[in-house]
Amino acid sequence: MEQNVWLIASAWMALALVASLISIRLGISVALIEILVGVVAGNFLSLHTTEWIDFLATFGAGLLTFLAGAEIDPDSLRRHLKPALAIGMAGFFAPFIGVFAVTYGLAHWELHAAWIAGISLSTTSVAVVYAVMVETGLNRTEIGKLILAACFINDLGTVLALGILFANWNVWLAVFVAVTAVVLWYLPRMTRLVIRRVGHRVSEPEVKFLFLVLFGLGGLARLAKSEAVLPAYLVGLVVAGVFMRDRVLMDRMRSIAFTLLTPFYFLKAGLYVSLPAVMTSAGLIALFLLTKMGTKVVGIWPLTRWFRFERREGTYTTLLMATGLTFGTISALFGLTNQIIDQTQYTMLVTAVIGSAVIPTLIAQRFFQPVVVPDGPAQSEALAHAERLATPPMRGVAK
Amino acid sequence: MFHKILIGLDGSETSEQALDHAMALAELTGAELHALSVEERLPVYAATVGEVMEEERYEHHYFDGVQARARTRAGERRLELRVEVVAGHAAHALVEKARTGGFDLIVIGHTGHSRLHHIFLGSTADRVVESAPCSVLVVHERRKVG
Image (cartoon, rainbow over the protein chains, first blue to last red):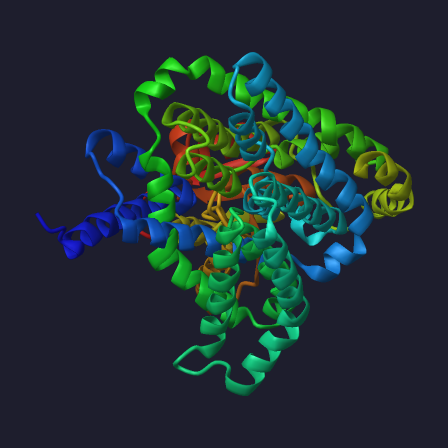
């Protein structure tokens, strides 16, 4: 029987609407609720994806990654580049290596599956960190901005690993890298030109221009067997300065993403989580989550002390950087879609990712919430010290 | 009797009644009146920073309206009301404000809008009463005074 596209679309949109209503009622991000609604729909309603839903979901993940890259404050990143690089890289490598070792050595996963596990649980959720910082006022301080910059570097590591580790090292990869480099170089001024000449019209040429770039680079990434989220994040990073001055464009793109694209992505991410697998693998899920949190502590906490964060502030920062959501699910879904991991492994990773969004945040807020005086003397001193010390630890961490 | 009164203002019916009680007390005692609104609907576990920022803007807009109405009502009674909006958990923010600001009375409505916080940790009023460094007047829903 021919598929009724409208009925399928209405079923998915009904779930997305339910997720939005629950999210507003509970004050929890719609992304997390969409994943959980997807879990229910997949396990109890036998909901399936179609080719066009897969495309919308993939585009949603790409656009989400682009928005994540575009949300960085370039000036803040430049100001705190060295300490942010040190903390961000430690935040990526420590859990990547730790989770890889546990899944490959202890759980006996295949090599590539263990890579996916390491990548999925190496992430930091910039949005979770930001939301928690807003509540403490830390987002308005320079230390807070340094932490956010470090989170972006951490996620850049994740995206680079996903884009590079699974790519085919052939001529297509060379073409992809060369074209991406040229596009990234010219994109900020091209975007500004498009906005200046034809921007903010009803036909939204600037949005279409950016979609064209994302589609084109995503297509080249796919030819190189790389992942479309890599160029999407990089494109976001290079146009972040443009977006800082044009919040309307950012808001429009977010509206498009959150209305029509990301619901399909997050619902689909939840759809493949098998509840029976959660039950049977609960021990391993807990082990993966503990490994992620433990390795984040090992990698980041000493650096926060080295940069003279207060003990409480350092622990708080470390726990916030142990959170994860969007990039974790994107990485796990990439593994499942490309048959690098199976559904049980996917279930374990996504459940651990969801746990990492919730548990470190709760611990940080309950036990380590710092009392913040925006840019008080202690913070300024710690920041100045961090900048002075940035070079020596960089040598150790960056290698 | 009271010198500085802090009102928890979230736009709910009982917080409006709390404002009435606080204004009546201020008229009797000549106490300073301060109102604190707490943005606690920011999405937890968000997917993008923009999502949080957009909710922040929405909350600011909402509380601007709530506080403007409260100041107008205080003005009608020739009282000065100082207002402030912060993000965080309502109970924690109120207690901290009372502690750092040297307040001797907190006036709050019995039902706020803490949602999950309320389900797992009790109402905002319960938590404020438990932790406040000063006296707390909890206003239950009933007909307006004054």
